[in-house]
Image (tube, rainbow, N blue to C red; front, side, top):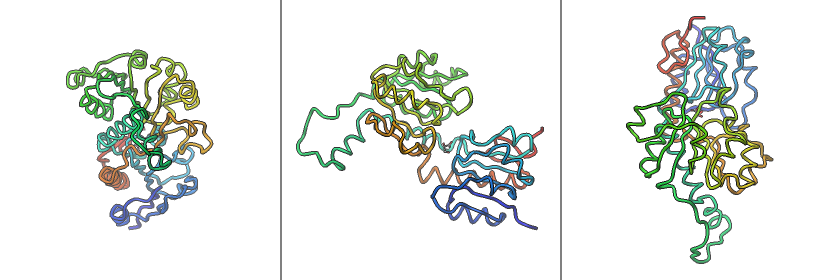
Length: 325
Ligand code: DGY
């Protein structure tokens, strides 16, 4: 029997590749260099594993008559046109759950780094070599403990962030489409409107999926509601925040700072004005980037891919094979 034809958009670990190659003829983008447009690789495929966020459009899907499965190495699948997959009965898998704690850790890392001036401290000592004596008056930050955190989008990751925040004695407000009284009970978090959350929080963290509704959810009007001392953390998707509005708010002192793990576009253009500001930290989409979590994600994505190719139930499915049209 001939093997399934599969394309993997970024290098996966050798052991994962070996297992996939037992059942598939694999084309993999082997370097971390910029991936060329993937459209031309799609027509002969039975399966596609996206290990970045390269858009998979209905037009691309239409060029691949044999495509059976798309496996996303990640929880967010906003880059894959799920409706087009549904119409064709193409299975779509992702890797939920396994990265929630890791992404919550990164959220706290960004929040703490912004609050306590970790990047300026690093620059002062190691880059500029300016630490000549103990100066009690430099790099004052702001307290995280006993402050108020506003969580926008209280899913698995938001819940994990709330747990960490409660350990810092933070008051935690949350905004979500559906209220979670069980989590209010469990964690002592308070449900509020988005407006109230923005007005009352010292730190705002974003954890919503990217949809039409959440695109530019945070723009000029929302930033204007925030405290001038507040810090915004975006670890969701870049377009959830209007970056030009964010730039203006940071430059004008409308908010004190921001720490973002995701940008619009991604990677951010090297001449983007945000890069020139000192009150913003930008990380290159590292939310789930730990050895342990990335291995788990690759393993789950491999299991999804192989199941989908064989027309079997995906263990972590967004769409199962032959989904009714
Ligand atoms: C996710 O899991 O959605 C992360 O953004 C990595 O893709």
